[in-house]
Length: 402
Image (cartoon, rainbow, N blue to C red):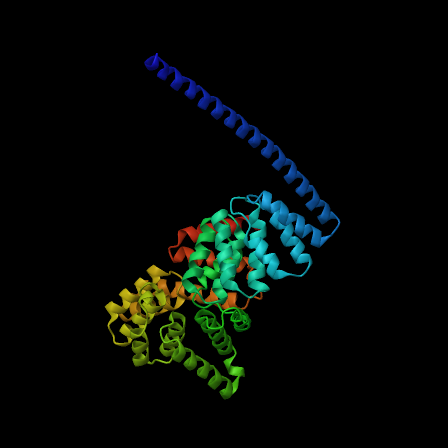
């Protein structure tokens, strides 16, 4: 009896365990269904209350309802967009930015709010580093948002971040989301300056007082725009410009933009020893910066090391095919070696690049470009061997009315 009852007891216990588990599963399923239904009703109520507050322009209530809605549905953008709108109506840019910053990347609707956030960061909070990060965040969500490319291009041009400027201009063109100024940024990366560049970089320094990039950019925009009007400045104006340049290099002796500014001036003045000294103190990243190969070529040319000068100029143009100065100096080397066809070819490209530079710097706005200038840009890109850019420019020209 005892032996046969043990299996029976075990089977009975197992049945009871199974029954309990089934009951618990049933309760869990029932609770899940109940909670799901309650959650849907709650979200619908909060959405309705939020929209009602928006229509009534009750900004305090709108913010409150939107935030409660967000607690129930954090995976969508709409609640935080409402909350940001309420904060904006109450003139609270900080809270507005906070709501927009927390938008979910999974929801494509977040892009609109993030564009608004970047605008606030750039223009209201004067925090362009945060604005830059937001624009890149937008492009990770959707690489076809052309406005992000435009804002990044403007920021990199203003802050004199040459490598990033070239990179973002090419990326925008590759994605087919460029604006006309993308081509100016690409071809003018070495010479593009703005009359309000110093002022804007000074404003950006409010959020980052020790930022080297903004300090250098402010000085470069000042000296470059001053040089354009140097004849009307007189001796005192030229002395002030020179003082700013010297102070800039003394403070940032390894800064690649400060060095390029001084190297260009030293070449213009024929100061070979100064150019050599500046090249020796250049940071490692100068090895991939075409300007420094152009300056090296100039030194070789002054030493009558024409073969080395040619190699340096060609390397510069390989890295960046829009350096009109490198074309001009390379043409000079070929004149000295009696390779006159090559000399004429590169001189023509240099002249074309110089014309584009002069005309672009005279534009009041780079958002739209004269057709004649764009036609020259097509020729320049073609002559430089940059067929992708030439094709993109020609496509844009074909779409515009003659």
